[in-house]
Length: 62
Image (cartoon, rainbow, N blue to C red):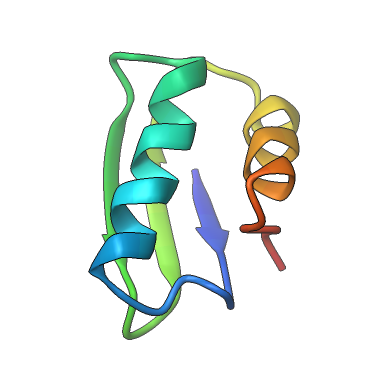
């Protein structure tokens, strides 16, 4: 699945987003590009759950 996160702008943001996603699914594969604000995630976790934890961490998907 893919998320567009406008507030993800640097490497620190990428690390934070990855950590948040992996708090829900430790085995999730996360590929994030701060230049395009896109995050690709391979996971079994529901999209709604990931959206919720990202929003709680200040990285609300658009």
